[in-house]
Image 1 (spheres, helix red, strand yellow):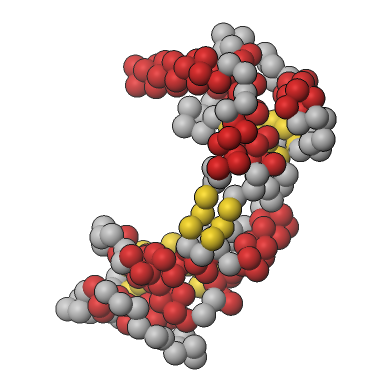
Image 2 (tube, rainbow, N blue to C red; image 1 turned 90 degrees about the vertical axis):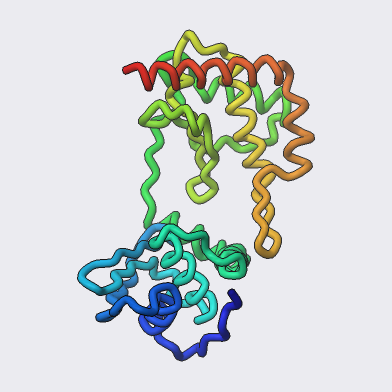
Length: 246
């Protein structure tokens, strides 16, 4: 499949209708109901109801060129029919989202519209502020400004921690906030997220590199790295077993 060069004046509804007919040329299409929503990110959704396409897009897409909207239409409609989206559509989609000005706009929108729950650093077993201070002195020369620190509402075993640059916050899974979890494991997860703060995501065209070479090199400096990873592996395996046996 090769993306057509859609006219910039072609309405988004017509783009979605045209792409739909590429996938389902024999299926009657009564129309496209498209609405732009004030989402906190670039979310989008599509549904098929009563021979009509119902499309909801973040208002961030209102400023996108028609070829990019066409790429988004390919991705959404392909997924709706449980097909893999075309490679060139995925590339065009990622290239646009990775543009510096688009990322800047998305971050501002997330800051102003998004809500971030931050519990605070003090947990039941571990205090992230204390651990952050120790790691900051040991590995960063006390030069890292402390972000908001907190524990997740739910004990996720798939996301043990994440750094949110839009809200300048590090959140660790509450699964780790347990005296049975080794302090070394908690330290490593927090250290990992501190590295994300120091080494931002690298965007190059359609590529998005979360763990750059400087990031990986510095991660190896953590004392007890292998032991911490093994402890986390056992913890997640145990949590998975408990989850399915409940």
